Image (cartoon, rainbow, N blue to C red; front, side, top):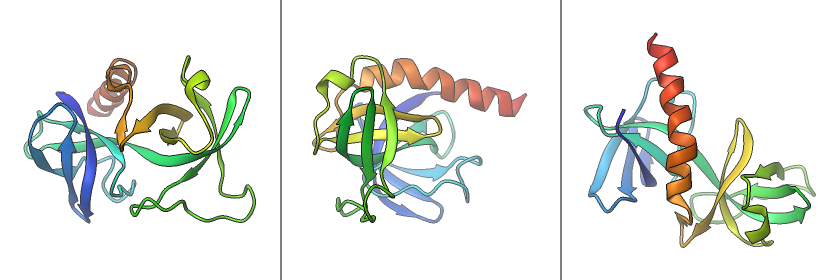
Length: 155
């Protein structure tokens, strides 16, 4: 796999137009088989693209949300819609409880936009102007897990 990070600009049933974070061109990427018809990708979500596939494939995604509570080692986050609006929910019913990656908890404040996953429930990074603040950490820590998952499916 040749993984890179990108942000979904527009999405359709077969894939998304993605702005790559490494300064490459905007690409049209299709959904990889485990993503297709299983995981909904929305505009502004962070995605991992496999550039070795032809056409490039979206193999992973992170939700974007807003920190609504910082309580010790747990962070309360509401997912955001493509428009940037916070998904509305009564009281705390829509709040996802997340553990931040090590070291990130000291930088989080209520109102911050963040990238997170629900399986596992982990806050991966702060979104700075819609982009991950620490993309190198995502590449180092998450890309090996993505590659292992896809290698296990192939074997």
